[in-house]
Length: 130
Image: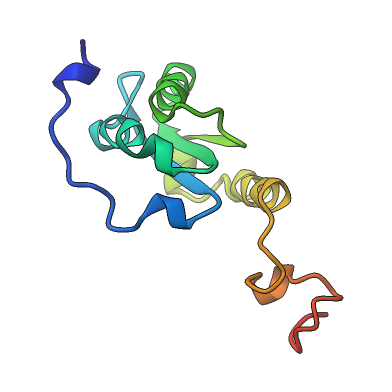
């Protein structure tokens, strides 16, 4: 199978177990996620608490690529983002990217003591919180 013939890629530099959410993303080529994306998720799947996926393609092929990512990761993603390559390159999908980021903050919020200033809850006790 295609997955069994994937090249050996080096492991992630960061430990995915140290994060509450890992976003995995990359290009879609011929209805498949890139080699790196297909080779990596399964190896470290047990170390990931939650995942989200993003993909950019020439216009089609998102569904098979995202389904493969989910199978290899062994987890259902909290959210997915599929961007046509042309719109991504020209930054035309900024609203979709912002919605994806907002959904991740909602589905996997930062703990109050680690939230960036723009997402800190008002009662967090941080001086920069609104």
